Each structure stands twice: as structure tokens, then as C-alpha cells.
Image (cartoon, rainbow, N blue to C red):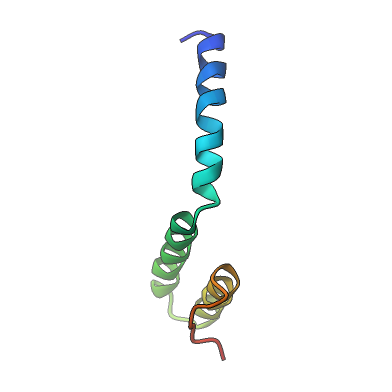
Length: 66
């Protein structure tokens, strides 16, 4: 692929990716991934951090913040 082809592809896909990144589905994916990672540890600090992030990304949701 030439340089112009890559630039054209970036120009086409960039707005689509930016919309997806800002979407609720992407935010939910990020929170779910963080929860899965936090579940693998034996401390509660990361669980609280994930709950904090979730409460800020989804203000109306119920979390187990203490």
C-alpha cells in the first residue's frame, strides 16, 4: 500500500473510530475489561478503583462504592 492509500484509509476510518470510542458500548467494554482484570487480584483496592471509574463513566448506575 502506498502512503496516499494509508492516508485515505485513516481519513475514512478516523471519524468512525472516534464516534465508537465515545460510545456507551465502548465505555461499557472498558469497564468490563477492568473488572475482569481486577477480579484476578487478591486485593480490594483495584476493585474500588474500578467501581469509582464506573460511577464516573455511568453516573446513574449503581455501584458498590463504600
